[in-house]
Length: 582
Ligand code: GTP
Ligand code: SPV
Ligand code: MN
Image (cartoon, rainbow, N blue to C red):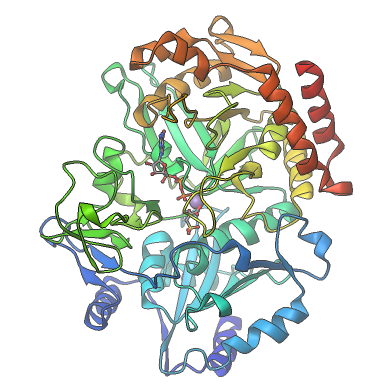
């Protein structure tokens, strides 16, 4: 018996499902699952004429986003996970959490879901197996990963380092919900949630938390990043990765519809949430997208903001927690057209504009195959990945942080990532709009001590002879009335064009050096061409010395919490920033 089979048997002896089903990933299997979920109400049909083969799932109202406070990294010593992770000892996990799996699948089917993270032909791709009692998770994993026979084939060809993950809905109570990661055995246990990153174990649990520890050990990086290709009128393509925290614009930037398409400027998507990056023989960082689909934020998506996304989920899509119109079409806040007079809200209740509530949950999402993206890069499954010229760090900052600025060196860029902050969003449970430090957009996803992680980033920059240039961006600066100054979305192309000039060392006259980094001129961005005043354009690109001194001083406590694990280079960059400001 193979190691996979004996593990499956062992888990079934504890969880006690009625039946064990091995998933092959076929259409026939998927149709059976969909029919079964339609029959038991797990899925509802949406208007099949407008949205062929699309369905709606309503999750439990207390299970609508990742739950960071119930997410743990399990190691022998707390120091290994650092001050920004929740820690649990493997012994406590066995004593406190494993008993919850005892009999948890009684009366249910346990699905064995083999999957590949990454293009089938890539040497950088890796296998995982998720055992789950949720058919919704199975159908979602089939969209989000290369699932089924293709993964078992890879194992049969000798891949031994597969990641075992056990998932059960449990009773869906947040009181008995745990998402545990064991970096030493590369194992994942998740119970009590059927939502998103808590339950689709390939995504945040494997491709970020476990993979980040693999990357530390093996000399590569697993990052919460989009990957895009920027095509210029000259026909060259500049590959750019970007780390923005959850619900801060990765999917939108990766699928950007260019307002300058007629002139030959275009964006192609390689990935929209996760990037695995290896140093290539040419000393550059090469990125693959480990995913096969998009689990994208629905609210705010429209033909105006993201027409390419509107095409992606036209068919073969599972919507979660969106609203429905009277004729069975999906709807959410920010959708094109007039506000409907009547809707069914995300919990299945009648809704009118007078209801005073959101019709779609703010973290409602679409799960759609990448292959349906009209601007999918022809290199998105390139086994080597794509070579990066730039890395962007971004967040939601109402004040202080300009639209874009470039770092002076790799080390300075790593410092920008280490100190970046953003306002919290509905992608995780908890307060929304609170500014928190979210280094590299990895605060909820780094599987080890964040200080050691920065040291790893610094080391990658040492080993790579030609690393990408690091930038910081902020689409979310607001004016005195609290309105976003920058129109964002497609207009972000203006920022990408300046970045391309910088990485080609041609942006000299279009830029000015400030204490925080290289900032474009108002003209370089064409900030006045988008209908904002000169004064607002200047505010957008301004670096206020007093605000930045406060910002830098506020970074001190954040950095010092890492103690001995804080790389001296990061402390030196912090001191250098304060010196430049004062
Ligand atoms: P995760 O999937 O949670 O990791 O999120 P993400 O980083 O992919 O964010 P996404 O692109 O889905 O955007 C989240 C929200 O921000 C949506 O409501 C978008 O409409 C909005 N958004 C994205 N880009 C922009 C922008 O350039 N400007 C403004 N104002 N809003 C934006
Ligand atoms: C995020 O929160 O960053 C997401 C959604 O991409 S989830 O898959 O739930 O993590
Ligand atoms: Mn994400």
